Amino acid sequence: MAHIQDLDIGLAIEIQGPEGVEIIHRGAEQSGTRVGWNQPGMEPVIEIMQENPDLARHAQEIMDNVLAKSTIQGYQGAIRRYQDFCETENYDRTIISEKSILHYLTFLHKNNVTVACINQVRPALSLMIEMYGGDTSVFTERVDRWISAVKRLAAKKKPPVQKAGEVALQDLKDMVDRVVIPFKHSVTEIHPVRFRTVIRLVIIYFTFCRLSDYLELKAKHIENRR
Image (tube, rainbow, N blue to C red; front, top):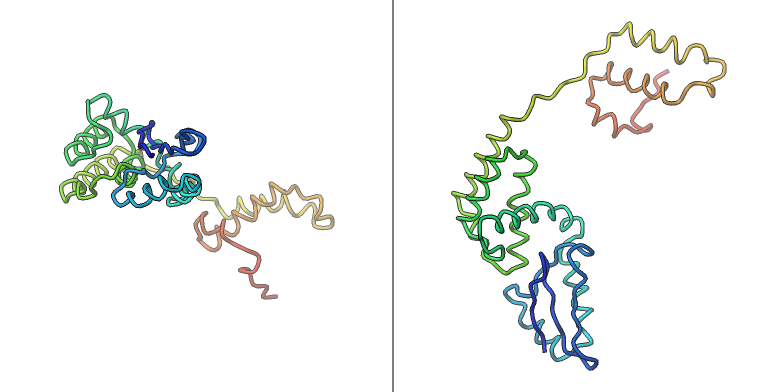
């Protein structure tokens, strides 16, 4: 016989096997949030497991791979924040509603959270709905507008990005004279970190590429036009 249990942010299923009751659950701290056995449509799987207890662990392995582990781990913090909010405001964390989402977003705005934090709200709550078998229709047009508004307000509070100052051409020449030229007859003695710094600055200076583009640069991208 199978029993569903709500354990922390994951779910466990008990299977009555030949050697007694076995709880198929490793705990949220060890394996992350798990896809719930009480999702709509899971009844046939549970019936198969009731009739074939030896398949329980194999079914759990499949369930564990429905969502990538990185996806689960990435939203654990966001899920925890929402659950803490539910506990404080007396919401049932397993029943996500339009009201609870709007209340939560307002709570986040009050606490000056970052845009990155707000960006996790919808996917994290969607994952919880998938866990607990809820209805995704709670993400109404009003909710979407509320999310956008809270993100805009958070973006306004974000401090401006400090851009690095420009490097003068003469400074680059001086760096080459100090780091490279003295070792032109014994290049193996060039300080590797200083050399990489000079090369990076020279390439960025003459190509106007972003640092992110530079990091993707490979030797094959550089043509020798002697």
